[in-house]
Length: 360
Image 1 (cartoon, one colour):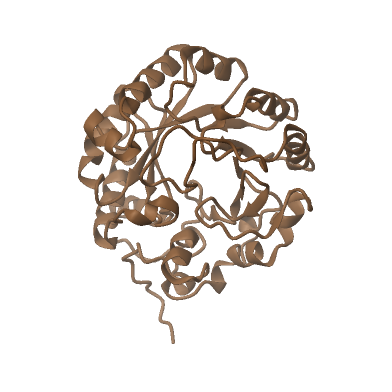
Image 2 (cartoon, helix red, strand yellow):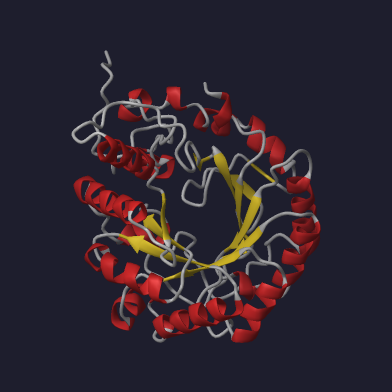
């Protein structure tokens, strides 16, 4: 097992500080509701969690405060301050509601937040608001992105990839560029939460979109967003293949591709999720609790929980993912494998690639 993929600590920690949100998005993983759960981690418990994450050697995990809507917690800025006091990088994923005011954006900037993420699931108000199920969300998102750009607060635009949004993605990319986004993250649907009501793209269509996205990055110029993916780690394999083809036309042969950006990082391997009530899981899309921060040290759970150890060993994956020559750099979406088959080590059905190695 390549040592570089055995992380003593997570690189990214997604902490769902609340499931409260004033939107009702069709694909919401958390199935968010308007009111906060009284069983949420308290401010003191949150500070103890951040202390644990900051302990030990660098690099320190990048903490992403998500939800629900983090701004629904009155102590959100206290938690940001607590993380920054411990030199933990922090990003925030607010919802585009009336809580996301210019003043709130300025406070996020002044709190030394690394970035915020905003969702644009359509290039027009009609398309976007149909996903978010609250009128005016598109306009509020575009305005918030503009304010963030003006005050120097980096923005990542997140876009759902499913059958309803696929054809609109080029126009959404243009919009993300127009609002000054630093990154554009394509969230390939995993049918969990309310997302189970939506239709994923086919594996063949996903491959087409990943090739298109890889070419966008290859041709990227100053001022355009970097394209990344969530729950589509095969993007790394596609990008490597495109680079090899550019160097030697007609050749996209096997290789491990360990040098690619983000190589190997996936659910449970470099990524950790903490729910609003403290459950520790491999990701927000793979909500299999291995323990709770109220009863155990979060880093101990990450290092030692059997599920996490299995997810860090790509040689133990099943189906094509277990013998693919790109298994260490990609590894497939563990969340999608679980949603499709009940096996978190199973084959990712979104991938069309047939590994070159023979497998008995």
